[in-house]
Image (cartoon, rainbow, N blue to C red; front, top):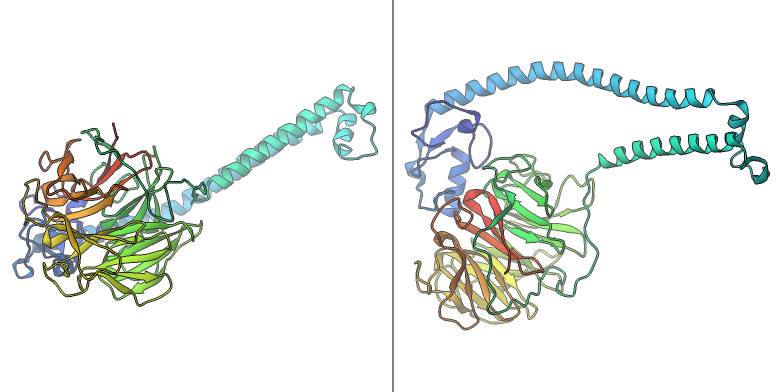
Length: 492
């Protein structure tokens, strides 16, 4: 809620945009928005900027909002009273529904039973003897009663299959294709994009796009994105504290990890920033950022919690090479480490020499990409550049940006998600310039492929693009952080 919109209060106005919970201790920040104090203090400590405008925020400038605190308290009391009444009414409705369902089943069964009971006795005998091998086919198959019996058997079988199918459909499906495509390794998409490729300038919303919220057709400041072989998207839905899976063509996503509120239990996530699919174990690996851990959640049906792979790390971005080594960026230590699954101590592969802008340093590394040669590409956020670290290198190479913060074609402004194709061309979400740029290998400047039309909600606009990926056809997917949506731009 903005500080000057205190008339016509709705439930969304009483909800913190970070925790998505009703306020307990609301404060107004310099960006004009109201937050839960603990959440925005933690956010500022981590990021130093507004979650919405990305402009600097100062903890000392937070102001208590007593007006909203009182309204939120009233709302909680009202909801508690409403829920008490609702629980009582639901108990009655559920009992009535169970009775109706039971009676409907009885009616179906009774109808079939009545038909069998009204059949000639010879037909009933045929049903009873249908599986008896000693019965002669010539004795029965030419009799009309036989075909009546077969019809009844078919009817009973059909009703059972319908019932069984409905029961099975109630179980959540966590399916994953097992087809191996030549262009996909364990998690690396090997994509050869033509040098003259172009994409449609108006994106199509393929996830979210219904305002910021927690419904399954909504997202709340989404971050990392993984696109699977069949164009299924797995999205780190950051401020819904969940991972949501969106299959091609669906209007709603399916929560596959987290989504259980704000906390540090194994069934919780707080502000997840990146996710990938480990095909070897059919599991998700997640940067559970504000819990300072990397966790793994099985994609198999019935999974209710994750397991900790690595903890005590301010993780942001993830990647996995074709030998299943895990790469994780750490914004506190300004480094990227490589881990073998199951081990707690990793090896530094980029940065690790403190915060700075020298070639052997990083300043807030976020998203990363690893190619088949184990080369590590890093979005060096506060240095406004993308760095390339060859395997076993002691320092990196600037491959995009690095000319200070700005919007010229030689510059980047808080770069985030990135992808590298087989030609070494870099695709980067130029966050604060609200555009996606393409930098050919060795080029001194890039060019805009989508966006770059200002900060906005249009089909050709972004509000701080956060991450990007491609499918196997070369279509581009962009996480539009500020618009809480994912946009697809078709390759032409």
